Image 1 (tube, each protein chain N blue to C red):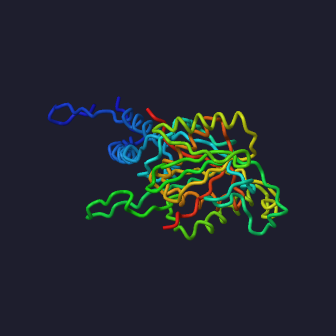
Image 2: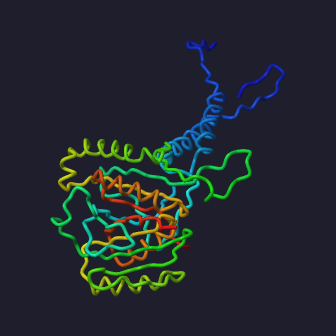
Length: 171
Length: 168
């Protein structure tokens, strides 16, 4: 406690405990900060399906997961928002827009990196071996099926066999 | 007795450090998102084998242009055709084509008829693969309703093929 020359007492609060608490809170939020939210596109109205079950992990620890997000183009700013179904459908993977004509090339590149990780070759895939990675489909319920089936066909061609269809459960 | 200060006292001003800590905290609070655990249906989509008897309205499922059809062994296939004009399910055809003609199932709001028919087909038929053929305009949510019915029958493997556009 310091004293001024005029005899008044100054009270200085001890900030150390407050700083400790703030660091505790920061540590908490840093630990739960989830970078993987970038994989999930927003504004995807998933279909409601009764038999879907929440799972925390796909397969084992080493299993790689590729999330394909199908959604409608976001409405443009300053323009009266057009109905969802009138806007073009888009495919987003890891925050990147993948044009429809580049789906095969994209899947091929992903398959090649999976093959390298799993020690497989293209001949192994042709001879019936499979990639263990999971393909997660997050598609808006109003997306045309044909667009999603193009991804299925591309993934099957390059050796992906395990698929997970994300949805909501009815209340 | 005079006390001599042998060492100068250093006072650390914590107010600035606290300000910076609050800035960081505000950032993480504003970027915090509740993690969503979205339920999934796990399904295996193997390469389609040539299907016996799938013809007519559908693409011949599993057909490989490079293979000589006469040398390929086709497999018994449970086929579901999901027909749609505007995006929702208009009609369903179900059956094992080699056993009997495809049966038209009238869809009700809960696809209960399809579920009953599938249950009886799965119990009475031996099939090696399930194929769902769908009209190109069908919406994903509608197809997932059919997948849901199949998943409830404990089917863990299926294939999807688009039907050609209906001639105008």
